[in-house]
Length: 402
Image 1: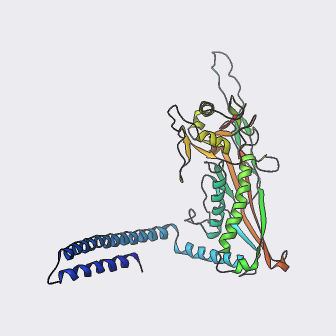
Image 2 (image 1 turned 90 degrees about the vertical axis):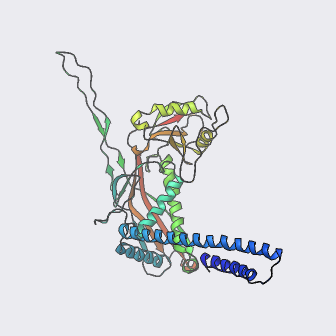
Image 3 (image 1 turned 120 degrees about the vertical axis):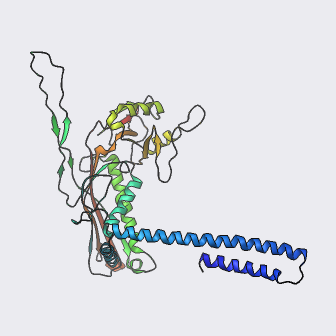
């Protein structure tokens, strides 16, 4: 029974009670009191019925509008393709087909800051997310939840291949001097460098019983997607924060590299708001305007507890949709960042669009039924290909503990 029907029934009951008193030939003071109460209930319920009808109409109008927008953004042909992919994934996971491998493509894009787009070569290339790409986006969601670095406005490149990418970059700019009459100009030599983006594999596997996979009461496809996404995200977050750059991605917070020191704290295990302001000011204004803070968990806790002389917190409280901010700049916490300890760098600040992230090939998800044959279990292997590098080392700087 829906809510409107419940209200209608309650209103009718109140109306019936009112009529029972009106139809009486003789009424007592108690009857009059009961009548007034019943009539008040009737009027209240009548207003509720009118409100509920208005709500239902508004919801119906909104649903119709959403459907029209959906037809524009995701045509019926695309939705039909998504249904096909969903059925394909479910068959693969639950042994409904004989296939052993599932390839989940990375949406193709080049130099898209904070964006994931699909490239189907058609007129509606942007925004057409098939179910495999949605699986890929699930990984992205977990990555952003676990990595303070990658939750920033990094520059993201998605490629369908894993070939090495050399990024031409002006390492040392040209310079000019004040000229003197009849004196030759001063030579200047801009120097170009080529930071490299590779495609390092992040992988894992788990074993799941056949009974679990084929139990229709359990959404096994969603379970496996979340498990694989969390595993990949955890490792990628660790690389983005503290990858050494030697046989693995170059993280933003590996010892003192690749960033430079913007401020050295006076203490060994804590720092002040003034020192973080100095870190902020150490970055050039152009980078500062787009700047973001990233802090380790301990450093983030120190910042959140800062108070003014009147006991008011200096950091705006984080919400479900917005980060905490300091001096108007967002603060991201990252568990992979260094501790607030002597000689380490627990906080960075700067223009994170200079931190480039590459996702390559796609997500591989493979099932093998032979390794655990006698246990009636299947092994699922998953992998993603990832790399990152800071292009401009002066765009992001760190706080160095004494």
